[in-house]
Image 1 (cartoon, rainbow, N blue to C red):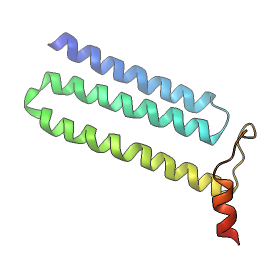
Image 2: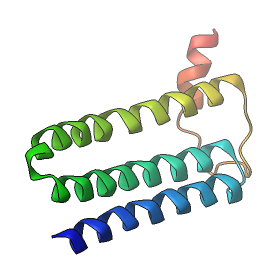
Image 3: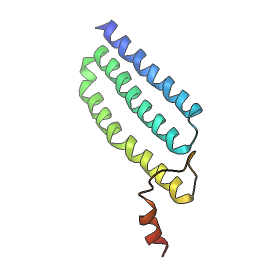
Image 4: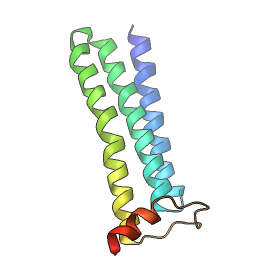
Length: 109
């Protein structure tokens, strides 16, 4: 069981490292937010599961923490991206389809 928990914790650390690399390498706020959110969500889940395997009596609390992280990380990320969009932050490349533009043009009128 110790080996499994250490493997899960190390895998979580790898996701954190790739998320940090994604934050450095991605060209715009929109891609950085996606890379950071996915990596931290998966990294946190794996790290917490590794701790849960080491301490089975904490598993219920760990599953609750994972549940709230899975709910709140994407919401926080989309809120940051939406505020960047509304503030006029340009993307690295122009989008092929901009489905949000008609919604925000109506608000401006």
